[in-house]
Image (cartoon, rainbow, N blue to C red; front, side, top):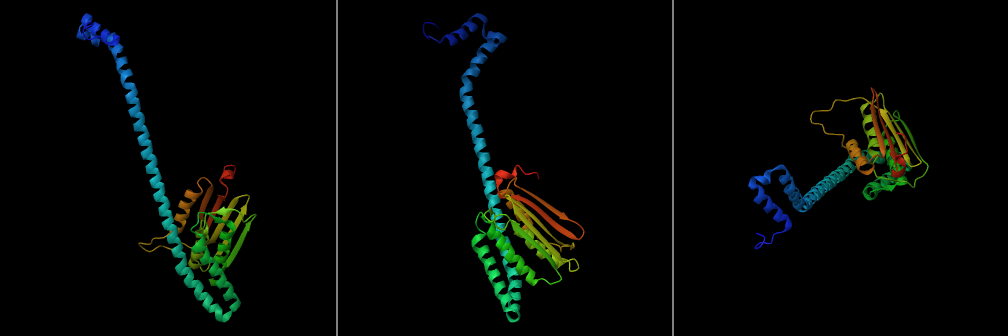
Length: 277
């Protein structure tokens, strides 16, 4: 062996073990640990590389899957937002235009004012609401125009209390993020409870924090079989999670004759962590 093969010292030691102790000597504890450590040493590098590649591959696949899921969720929310806007236009436009037609012969000044408000609403829905964020002043102007047109179509018996105050209109906000709450107050309050018809909207923005309180008279009505609704509020939940994660607190209270929405929203992500919710 030594003359013809010239083995390494390590291999020579294995051969010596076989010569002196026989093949069974390789399975004795001392000998086994001796060459088992060599085995571990030789396979550790390629095995480590293989494991690292596998871990990285699994991590990349997981990240890619999460990205695709997030992309799909965002796409769904965008579709739902488009659907939400399409729902605003038909029935709201129908009622508003009918009211304006009536005002043309009765009160031309109010008719002109209503047309101007409707024009601002349509301009906002068509040109502004597709943006990621808009100036807070634009969102407030849109809400005020919408509220005025809704008040115009309601009976004078419906009590409406509206207060919107901000210390600055230079903040930015995701468009239509709070609109469904306001729309639902007018849509479901006065229409479902003629004896308890009232709407109260309080919006205060101070030090980057938006506080919204929307409440209205409420009477539960059984939905017909197959009824599908509530996409507006569900849409807001998803959009808040996507655009303001850990930056908001939303509470919905439904008592016997009233329905109330409370939303606390930070318009500045860096400051929200210091706020006591």
